[in-house]
Image (cartoon, rainbow, N blue to C red; front, side, top):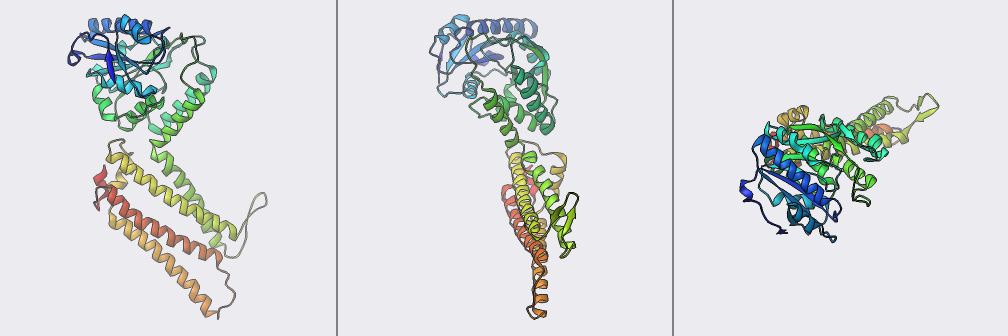
Length: 404
């Protein structure tokens, strides 16, 4: 990474840095830099803070760098390609305690960042812009993004991460240096913006939101953003950062389904279960129920491992019920639960075997019971050894609360 352009003052003395990622934005970059500098003048008047504009150039070949310097920006060349890589390089080039990021396509007016800086000064860690609380000008956003993509993804984010954000994908936002350093953001692509919001919500940071205006892109070419590809990446990233919804919720549902089905089949003995519509449940369904129980237990334990790792590494603060579980959790509890479940299954298998021997090796019609007993042995071994792994992840302690 190299730096071009004059530095208006020592980096240590600057309080606000506007960081603009840039890749061949010759038609718009100078206007964006000018508006950012006008925003800095207002910030100086209102809050007494100095600042600079940094253009994080990602290898432009259309002269964007010279235009940015002419507009009064400091240009930072970032060799690694990607929206996130450019922003990470730009943020690394300043020590300013308040960081503002925004696109270089004239879609946002940087003067609207003033209340964002005010929110940070008042204690917010991250201040998001909201186009839905502000204004979306005609032709500024495709209808599928406005009425389907953004509302759906933002709704999922609100539900999964318990946040009040109304616009998860707004391109202009401000974050404090302390919060940025704490989050340790690493995504190099478009998911960088998603990572910032999701990790902030997981870490329990204070997130504010102010209305902003979205204007049509003025670059005269297709945007770097691909709505379907980047929307899917955002969706995947939401699940990657939320082990509760990725692992624990599906595993709990699958475990309940498998338990009810297997219990009903075992209690029914040799009878076939009939449901409305002519659907029949017999011995073959016991195998499916067993598989559901094994899969759900394994998935649930993986989810608990992910929660412990996330809490241990400071990426998330588990929900109250999970914190309560981990505070009560001890290695011996898992060993007793796993050993007891496995032993009960072995005793059940032994009982079936002894009954078969007592019948002089006659016809054995205990398929469902044998499947249930074998499932208990498998589940017991999973729980038993998972307890050890939980202790390893918790810092080689028998008390698993050490991870949170």
